[in-house]
Length: 173
Image (cartoon, rainbow, N blue to C red; front, side):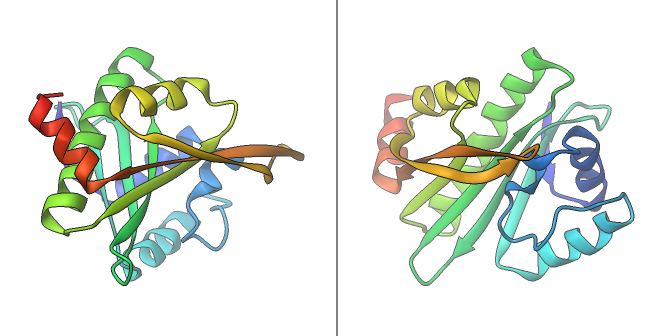
């Protein structure tokens, strides 16, 4: 497995993975891509903002997981988005951890941010459990926050401070 910079090819992979409302959780996108042709414009908008992204993929360049960050340097914070491939749960879990490890190191060490937060659907128990095991702290519930398949659903918020990330590194986790 390797971790590489986000590219337009990866956006095309993600479009294939998530052709539903889950894909629209990136707040920097003004609309979920409606077709593969919209991917190029979405990727361009993403790069125009103070963002970065990385992807964990196989040696054969098959995307497994992605870590996106929307950075606000004024408050030294970022909102991150974590996406795993639905194709392989086992490989995806390892890839998600690898993407998170690399992404947080960049945000906290290289960019000097103080906090990182992310939101997920409240019923995404697998990601919530992984986040808590990884050291993110639960911060709250947003009721009826998004529409998925025509239904209003809740979202939850998690965060991690730079000091918590440093403590995690010292423990060797």
